[in-house]
Length: 312
Image 1 (cartoon, rainbow, N blue to C red):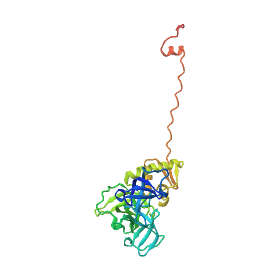
Image 2 (image 1 turned 45 degrees about the vertical axis):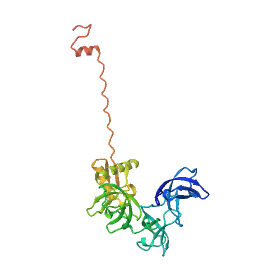
Image 3 (image 1 turned 120 degrees about the vertical axis):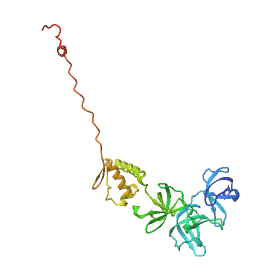
């Protein structure tokens, strides 16, 4: 059966002047308009499509991909506002996505962007958006482990840092003190679970912790030194923005990595940057001079003998 608001692979039943009709299972035949039909496709093929309802409440398919699907959070732009119906958002498809009035958290204006949850409305069986994010988060205790890599989307700013939605399910916090700079709302990042608190809150970081973080960063820095001829104009006093632009890491992580390289005598830390230590290639010792060939007289003398034909 076709899944509304999610990716599907549906077989083509027949071709008409309007397009292909796909087998939607219990939902019946679903139209894929002709403008979305891939070149060379024919009845009997199976196509990857996204299924949703059009303005007349009919199920339709498209080969386009929306910015966010049912069960996901996205950062979408307001196209228009209807005071009696709700807000319409651009989600990358021909038909805009409705956010009903009841799902608005605050008033918005056209052109604004906001983080929303894309969901299937139980009342209408339509795909809708909701800005009331808390109602869509998973309240069961998470099973993440410390150091685990996760995908997050920045959902809001707090005095401590940034609220982030983890794997479209849980809320976590990125601390401002551990970041190189601001994180734009709605941006997606790879992050790492720093701590699981007893109250269920999750502390996050953009960099890996401990040795598991430092060793790869050290390798990354050495590779950059190799590519730059052995010198890199970054050091302890470089700005967090410069370091993040070059390596995508925090200044704290950078300092830990170059400290490790310095202790390992792989780099020198200079006032204007860091320099790779070039280990001198050991040279082979000069060859020993060849021993001169002894004459018969010398060999005999060394053996305490008298050369043949001579009398003492």
